[in-house]
Image 1: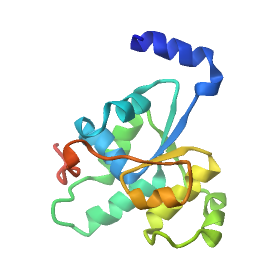
Image 2 (image 1 turned 60 degrees about the horizontal axis):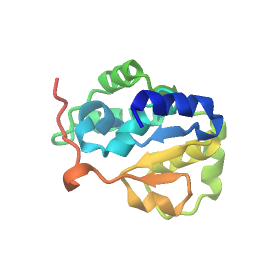
Image 3 (image 1 turned 135 degrees about the vertical axis):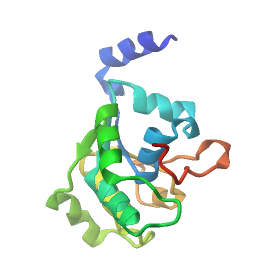
Image 4 (image 1 turned 45 degrees about the vertical axis):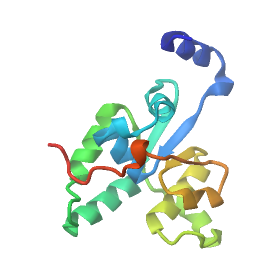
Length: 159
């Protein structure tokens, strides 16, 4: 089915609407290295009828890594934020209510940013697209993504 026809079908059938929250690695891949995403994931992110969010927590995580001058991590938080908004993704601020589930969340995973993204995904609700397979233990809303060619993300901002 041609893409335009598929989108019209989606628009006609509200049951097919999906909401996605991008993990920090998926956000970076979508903006900096989209060729590393599978066709299915690229389609989900590009479908205008789907809601695609990025969390302000991801920008916070990027800012921390950037400020630590981590070897090869050269993503400016301001540039990533600007690109995400220009791409049409919706920023999801961190609200106090998003933090409530953290108090009872099991400790399968220790990364505070991933845990917050999980809590936000549950609150929306949204499917959390992540490259971290450990997160699927938390919820059916988590979709684990494998980058193409088994490669990781580039560590340098191409600008």
